[in-house]
Every structure is written in C-alpha cells, then in structure tokens.
Image (cartoon, rainbow, N blue to C red; front, side, top):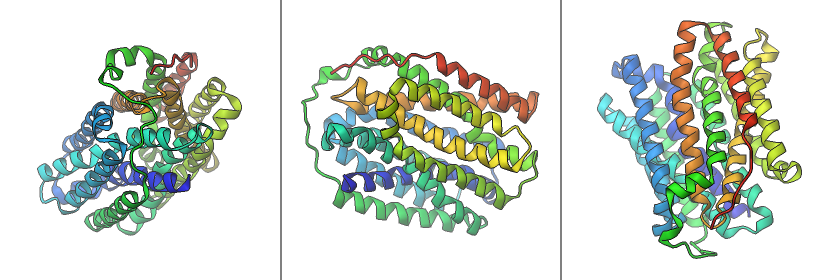
Length: 374
C-alpha cells in the first residue's frame, strides 16, 4: 500500500502546492521583477485555473485511452516544465505560458491517482488510499513555507528548486507506480458526461458550495491577518504552514468516513469549515491560529470526502467522478474569489468572512444520496 500511496502523495504535493498554489506566495516579488499590474497578476492566476479545468475535463478520456500511469507521469512532466519556465520567465507572456503548463498537472494527477487506487488497492483500503494521497497538498504547503521565508527575494531560485523536487518525484513515480491493470473494462459508452453530471448532481452541488465558501480563505486570509491584525510576513507564512500541517490530518479521513458514514462526516465537516472561516474574524492570536488549523484539516477532509463520494458513485471509472467534483470545486473557488474581492471592497474583511461562513452552512442542506453507475 505504501508503494502506491507515498509516490502518489508526493505527486499531488508537487502538482498542487509547488506548481500551482506557490504562485500566490511569490506574487509580490514576481510582479516587481516583471512589472506586472494587479490585473496582469490576476490573469496569470486565471490562466492556471483554465489549464486546471481543461485537464480535469479531459482526464477521464485520457485515462481511458492511455491509462492512469501515463497520465500521472504526464502530470509530473507538466509540473517540471512549467516550474522551469516560471523560474526563467523573461516576460509576462512567457510566465503565463508556463503557468498554463504547470496548471495542467493538478487537473490530471487527482483523477489518475484515484483510478490507480481503485485498480490496485483492496476494497477495504480504498478510502484510506484516496484520502492519504489527497493530503499531499498539505505536505506541499508545509514545504513551500520555509522556502518562501528563505527565498522571498529570490523567487527564480525557489522555482528552480521546486522544479528539481518535481523531477525527483516524477522519477520516483516512474519506478514505483504499478502498471495499469483494469479490473473491469471501460467502454466508450461508459463516458457519457451529461448522464454522469445527472448521476453526481448532489456531489457537484456540494463541491461547488465548498469551493465557493472556502475561496475567501484561500485568497484573502493572509491579506486579512496582515492588514487588519498587523501580522508580519514571517507570521503570515507560519499561519500558512499551520494550514498545511493541519491538512495532514486529512489523510486519516478515510477511517473517519468509514466509522461515521458519508452523510454524518460530510455535515460535521461542513459545520467545522464554516466555524474556521468565522474564527478568523475574532481579533485574537489563539482564534487566528486555531482558525488556520481547523480550516486546513477540514478542507482537506472535505476534498478527500468528495473523492470517496465520487468513487462510490462511479466504481468502475472513479476518475470521471473525481474530475467532475474537482471541476465544480474549482468553479466555486473562481467565482467565490471574485465575489469575495467585491464584498471586501464594498464592506470589510470581517463582514465578508462572516457572510462566507454563513454561505458555507448552506451546504448542510445538500443530500449525500448517491446512485452508483458502471
């Protein structure tokens, strides 16, 4: 089991945290070097999301034709080349192309690895395997924290280091992951996207709401604590690392879901996610860092739960369910970030975070009813 989980976890860390999320951490320095305006900086983030969404939409089809192993390795290649391009970017155009390439990996890795888990692990270990691999984002966040502190003014060197790490993870996956072994045949008729969306409608609504409500935290939490509470750069990076450290707890969510059941686990985690967003509005160091820990753990728990939910709806081709769920999650985050920015400009950080915490509670009314499809 470890031979499958550990390299997969590392691939998620590389494609999500290093190749995608790290852009926001280095953005002020990148903008100064390349002379980027706020609009141009935001465009780069949008381009990475477009690549992520495109890869998610194509992932099930690519996995069906080429197999999860090749798709996962291709995800690693996009991370390596995207990071190298970002490290050497001489212009905004070059940087945006590199962001697009780097963004592809995160959209390919999760569906490919969920399919690998489905095809290689026993039924009893499926939930644990999926949720541990999903927690890789948290390990990547922890890794980026110290590097941001040490190399804040040398972002090109940081991205070069990330590229080296990504290359090593790619080699590890190449030699460790098992070859494709299909437990059941997946014909062309199995991939009917409109039918799949109808089958997974509750999962997609839940994913959209989770993505939308959590977006304000991912996008504006560091700005909130530095501008409103006066935390310095190092303190805000520590805040970011606490999110990552707490997210490691998401690796045990497979056992958590098995013991409490999908429905109860989902509702408890949604309530805790809303609580974590609300806690950040309390001007206390204890509340701020407790918020970070609670948000990191519950967000990774919830995304892991979405993967488990998807594998139960689509037992033959779980990659399809995971790609649709994560696409809805990404749409929610994209729309939520935009609306959060407008809300903060028109009102304030505390008011906006409280509104999004309340919005998160709407997800409690989504049923976890599932209908399996083959």
